[in-house]
Image (cartoon, rainbow, N blue to C red; front, side, top):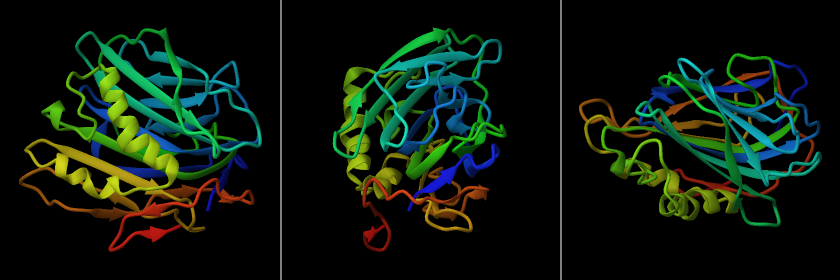
Length: 278
């Protein structure tokens, strides 16, 4: 089931993380379905606390991604997302950050219920300067603690936040922080983007396998927006050797929103004791 955001400007769904995401060497993957009913510049699709976010661009059929820098925030814009009101869009994002440089890489994919995701063009509009602050929260439908809620519905939204001492062990096999090679983007597309678009979430159960060394922590979450009280269960997976491991379960904090009246864009299967259809 989808949820509708934007009835109040503070509407959001916020998730507490077990790690500080968005810092140098961290990697973030975000995906979901968005159904805009109004396209207003600055309205937020998602954010990692107040340190990075995706919002409607000034050219309102496109997106602007902002990454916080301690001196100057970096800004990137898309070409090819081509949003229009009253349509479902599958969107996926992969971000990789590095304080050295500083350097950032961002990949964006866009699909519809009828067409498989394709990669969009991402251009740097403002160069980031300084270091990358982090945040231990993740928000759908708004920008951090802001009051710029997305106007429309969101369904089947999820994320992976990885913070690792050895980048080759991340779920995305990114070798150099702050870069994403074409081969690494293709791996992300094949393993995560395309399967999330299809509605299969078998990859969620296997992420622990790539986070079994000291200093390696991965949080992953999936929200199908079904519960009127608190959203869907979020699966959290801290894999730091020497601390508690396994699948931790949390629920997001849901502020405002309502169950959507538009039909879901896709039936999905999420992992559990057995695959559960939603």
